[in-house]
Image 1: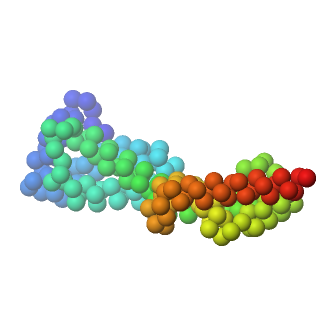
Image 2: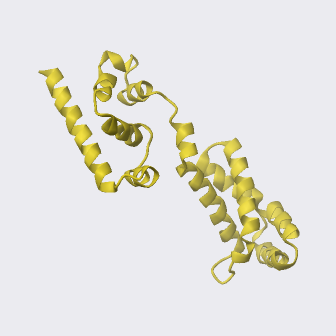
Length: 184
């Protein structure tokens, strides 16, 4: 990243190229800001490989949206950082990231969460979950084991938010009732 005194000069040169020579503008942006953009992306995704991919995606977004930059709303550097950071956040929120992060089986997840080193079947948790109606079991899996929010379930699966909340509540009530029967 350029030194403080050079920032305004470099930004004004880049902005000049925005309108006349996009290729030169991207080259200057990459030369002067790629390290800072990579750093912010890496902090969000915590993976070098993913950060490199997202840096490239960010430069594609920058290329496509150069006409949208408005210097009256803020510095070029801030605009670039927002594009990079938002790309990283979008990745983390995406289903692809969830699939990469949550590839363990339900048994492994429950075992890890309970701090138990033996199989979940020994304590009967998977039997309890599997005994639920499929619509409840699927929602519990999405919310508690795959990290979906209730809003994400509403949008992705087309289930009204009220129905999502009601089904999750009913599933938990059923699990409580089943565990009480087992204990008595």
